[in-house]
Image 1: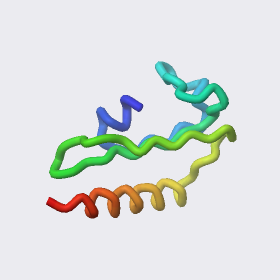
Image 2: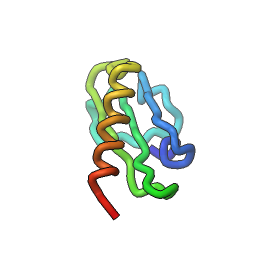
Image 3: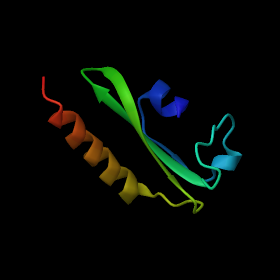
Amino acid sequence: MRNAAATGATQVVDDVHAFPGHIACDADSRSEIVVPLIRDGRLIGVWDVDSPEPSRFDATDRAGMERLCDLFIASLGD
């Protein structure tokens, strides 16, 4: 998702169909969470998870996925 990449902040979208400019990678997608992967101040990718359920992701999911992404980035080493 462009917003997560552009802002460097995790984006939680409760209804992707109401989100302007959303490009669906799965026709059944209803909600989404996108965590930017930032290493040494540079965007290296995004972790993007879709769900067929509206409003599937909450603050607990956000915190867990951000932690998972932090661990992944730390595992890359130098």
